Length: 78
Length: 78
DNA sequence: TGGGATTTGTTCGTATGTATC
DNA sequence: TGATACATACGAACAAATCCC
Image 1 (cartoon, rainbow over the protein chains, first blue to last red):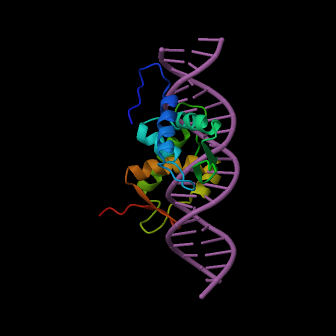
Image 2: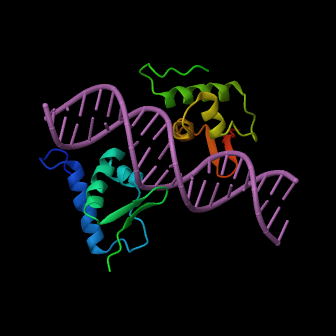
Image 3: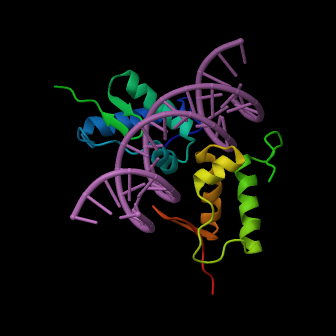
């Protein structure tokens, strides 16, 4: 929760951090998608492009993977 | 007809207005669906997502209701 | 009984333009 | 100048429900 629109940290970085924490907490078991982009946009009252920018960071880190028409899934790591 | 792609009014709002007028004219009697999303997209040469966005406005107004696998119907008002 | 076509619902992917700081 | 953020619009794929033969 609680994204600061005033501070120096970009919104998309704050959102990425929030999701990273949720993932590392184990909120999303492998095989289950994280909340959809539209869902996240709605919940945080953000534009979808901004949400995507946040998720893009997590993708670049290899933490999650997007699958068109399905969702974004936590990467399986053995 | 005639959607203006140049003006300041978004395409999806123009389309919503066109359908709203058609509905209020009584073009679609209760029990009959309005043209399908693909049909509207084809007629106006628009993407289906854009058509959906227009219909979504009418749904939010309570003017129509979507039925998955069936169609979009004018809401019955006694 | 079943399968295919139609239709709405959902999701990620991409691009452009605008405004602000 | 560049980064951030929003709105719009299109594309693509999949899911689910309904209808009809």
